[in-house]
View 1 (cartoon, helix red, strand yellow):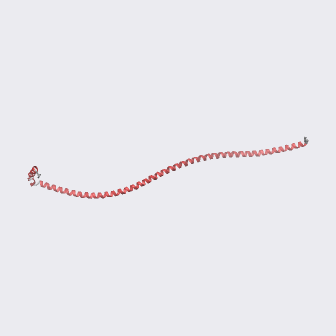
View 2 (cartoon, rainbow, N blue to C red):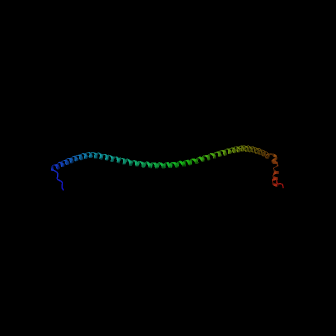
View 3 (spheres, rainbow, N blue to C red):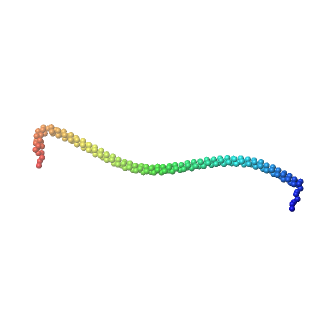
Length: 179
């Protein structure tokens, strides 16, 4: 069964009410749209600012990463330089220790050579004293030789030497050798 159709004035009144409600709803939606548009503009501006800020931060992050990579490379280089410096230092310390040992040996050798020099100087003084004595002996002997030469010349220039020359000659010829 069918329900009875409502009165036309009542339908009209309902339609008018719904139309008024629909217009109110449209006005509310327009207000909401206007608010949403302003919010959307603000949100768009915020999103644009956020995107710009994000781009800046990405650029900063890339720059920071590049700086980090550069610093890491510098760190590795400095570590290598430290290693090389450490090796050079150890090498220098080794050479220094060797040089110090050589210096100690050189000092010992110098001390030994100084002792030998003193001994040689003492020997030299003794030899100089002996040479002075030998020179005195040589001078005395040369003087004696000169004196004997003078006597020999005097002897050979004497009359008796000249008169006995024929005897000496016979002796040389006939045998100054005795058996």
